[in-house]
Image (cartoon, rainbow, N blue to C red; front, side, top):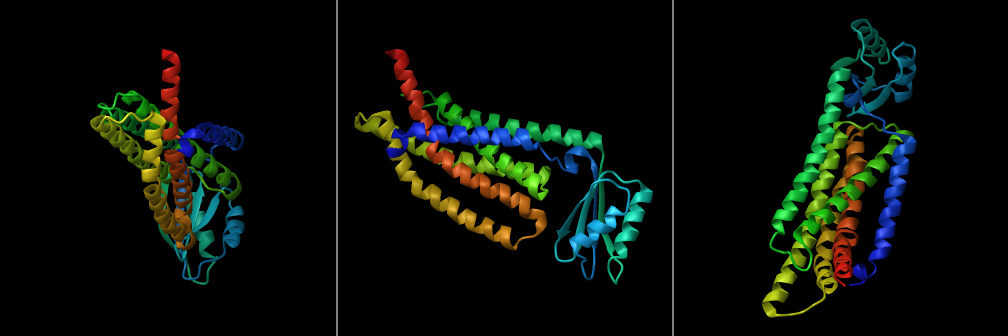
Length: 302
C-alpha cells in the first residue's frame, strides 16, 4: 500500500532520472561503433600479448586515424579503425607483428561499409520500435477482459512508459561510460537493450497479472475493495518474487563482469543497469501508474 500511496515520490524520481538521462545523451552524444558508422576490425593473436599501451604507440606511427585498442580473450588484441585500404591493412599487420618475439597471427579482419552501417542502424531502431509496439499490443490483448475499473489499453500505456524508462536510463549510463571509458554503441548494445526490454516487461506482467487475478477474485466473491488497495496487494504478493529473481540474475552478471572478457563487458554493464532499473519500474512505476489512471478517470466523472 505504501508504494501506491506514495506514487508522486516515485514519479518525481523517475522524471528526474529521465531528465538526467536525456541531458547526458545530449551532452555526451552517442559514440557509435563501426557496426553503424562503417570501419574495420582487426584481431591478432600473440604467444605473449603485448601491453595495450605498446600497441597504441605502434598504431600511432601509422596514418590510419583514430583507433580503439582492446584486449580480447587471453592472447588477442582487437583494433577498431576506419576502413583500411589493402596497403594500410598490410602495414598494420606487419607493425603489430614486431611487438612480440613471435610473429602475431591474424585471427580475423572484418570491414563494414558506411552504407551497410547506416542500414544496420535503421534496422536496429526498427527492431526496438517493433518490440515496444508488439509488447503493447500483447498487453492490451492479454488484459482485454479486465476493463473495470481501468481499461485494458491503459495497462499497455503503463507498460510502454515503463519500457521507455527502462531503455533510456541504461542507454544514458552507457553513453557516459562511452565518453569516459571508450565503450561504443554497436549491435551487441542493441541486443542487450532488447534483452532488458524482455526482462522488464516480464516483471511488469507478473505484477499486472496478480492485479488482474485479485480483481477477478473480488468480483466473484462480491468484495468491494478500492482499486489502489487491489494494486497494493498485488505488489506485495509479487515483490519478493521480483526482487529474488533480479538478485539471482545480478549475481551471475556481476560474476561475468568481474571474470569475463573485455568484449562482453559493455554488454554486461547494460544488462546490470537494465535489470536494476527494470525491477524498480515494475514495482514503483508501472503499477502506481494504473492507480494514477484510475484517479484521473474518477476526476473526469465527478
